[in-house]
Length: 348
Image 1 (tube, helix red, strand yellow):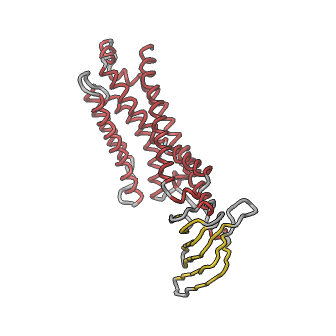
Image 2 (cartoon, rainbow, N blue to C red):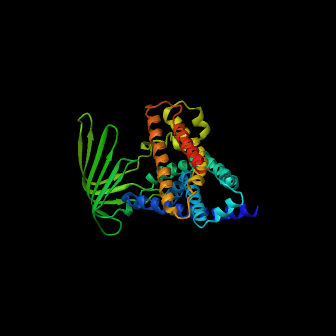
Image 3 (spheres, rainbow, N blue to C red):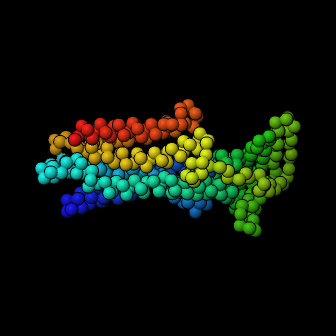
């Protein structure tokens, strides 16, 4: 009992540390990827924070299995290199004893992964989509900086201002807005966002410029104006729509769509792969004291990345109906199970 408590303590503490490090890395990556987009400067800070939070939470379904895998490899590798495991083996504890020792921890983390991938991840993705949708309605025209193109993929609108004028006025302003059957271009000497009584972004006021409406049927129009006010077209915005990554697992289970089936299989196979990867880490960690444990870590991470990359490829093939839905993504679980069984047989 004391030995099992000691071994679990040697694994649990690094597990929490590695999980925290991976979370910080994900937050940093999400923040950098969002801030690298010039349009992010037009989004309120509160919405940006929600987008980063949602993206980080959604990624935990992958980070937790990875953290467990790395922790078992490094923790057991250290115990092997310091011959502590050798002492336990002399007392009668083999690889099967290590598995029984860590099995409760592995089962608990597998259950947590199941909750993350089937419930928390869809919720986080739904939050991310809703925040992104709201962000497109919250672009702050007043934050435009001179010399940059600002493009929104959601609204199809592009802004450019050559320089900033007095107050909140933008000088030499260019705006492009694309639609299904026509496009609109506005070029003006000055542009200004008017305040709105409801707190939302108000209308845009342009001074001394031209407006071009380009239609697919060739019926183009050009208007030269001294002053023009462009009111926000609320009806132009389409609803958020169906997002399979934000769809509940139960709804995916009832669907016959190939993309929905691929998403469902991704969630379910993540649970099985978490358990198998933990067992694989226990088998791979068994090294002689003279061998460096970092070589095993590189091998283990390579296998982890291969399994993950292979799953992504299989998922794409299922979505495109290039392979059968069965075994589908379960093929990656089968391959991982074979690798784990062979590793266990060699280390036994």
